Length: 279
Length: 312
Image (cartoon, rainbow over all chains, first blue to last red; front, top):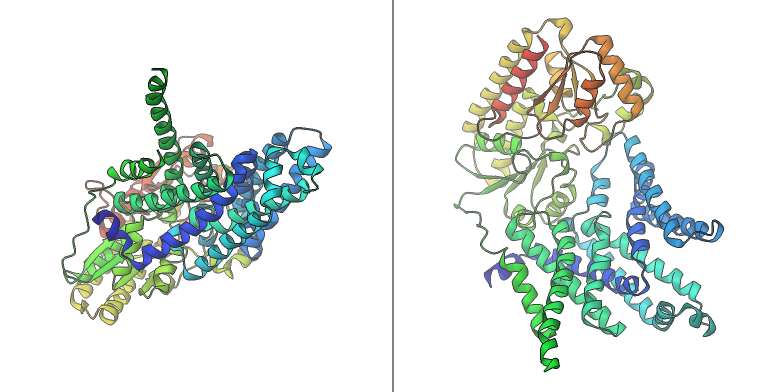
């Protein structure tokens, strides 16, 4: 057990683990709904689409998180506009805004005289730079996400399975959708510090997708997603420690590796069971 | 199924990661340096009194390196962390700041060595942007190690911090090494003298030779990437202006760096109407054995030799 205890006995590593766990908790909770509603493309686009907001906020000396939020709002509005006015499917609008925002981000960055440290921290973020005040923010985000999901649970559930029914039941699917996107944005802007906007989407979608492989009910799915997310964070951190590789990217990568391991395990155990039933 | 699933995953995931060697603590105080160049300088300055470890591997681009969890944790055992600063370690800044908040003394040596704003891009660009650049601390050039005179001052500063924070007196070995660095300065001055004055002009891939050029009377005509970092992108207009500049000045060599790709420099060389060589110089990191850049002093000598050979 030394490989486990040694790294985690350091107060610094405990703080990193705590911060990353809070980040992945926020991400997995909303990620479950992203997976259920098939919003992955939207989520991925939002995670990358915040880049120009951050770059512009940096250039003008504003708060970077506010820049990210502004970009997310602009992007959501743009997607809606394409969907309604151009009468194109929503994924076309998402695709257009996704590449448009990303291109804008790179253009703004190319005009900045120097590509400075705080900006690259946002893009490639580093969980190892987590400070006490970041933990507070991440804990707050996790608490807000959990509370809002509890309040909107019924609305989210009906929206996920039948939008028409939600309207009939007076559950205001439009508002529920908006709240969901707001939570998604919150997860992105609070956890890009852990792995950066380039990889944050892994923590949103992978643990939830893994959970959907093993459980059915939504509350258990959220709990399992948080569990798998924690597994990705701790295994990523330990692998980074022992193999001397970048921590944030290892966590994001592990969340995807765990999905495929669980999938393979499920397939193998299903195969074993089939002949017995046939007998 | 769930009961065996999770342990199975943990075992599968961690099995491969075990058994990586631990750093050997030999009882001497630990000093961490961010770049291989600073690592060598601290090591030479400290003699045998300290254990010196370097965060970045040989050949890494210092602008975008991210450390592992173990390295970040190891920072907290150091009696002193020596970083370049001036925005060089873009991928490390948060980690260094967090370590500092945990009470680890960190010196950003470049910040103490009179860093200068960089002046890059084609000459046409200079007029319009320059005055607001100079007042902006984000646009200071981080490549202070390219000036041996600044680095000899750095040796003194580092030695001072070591005796303060670690209580280790390294003044003898530091003085010897400082002498070697100043001898390097004389050597480079002599070598550059071999280049005719009207040919002391360089085009480099990113803006990494500013201090060197200032010290040895060279002129940086332009840079392929119009920034002091390898992470920026070139615009077509700047690129075209650079092609014109090369043709006008009759530049026949572009100097790249061993820590970055030369794709853009190669493309530039092809655009020019005559034969242009792309020569890679060791600048951002020390090299492997046999590269001629195993130490800071050798790296500077090798760079200078290549510059002189190609400009003469």
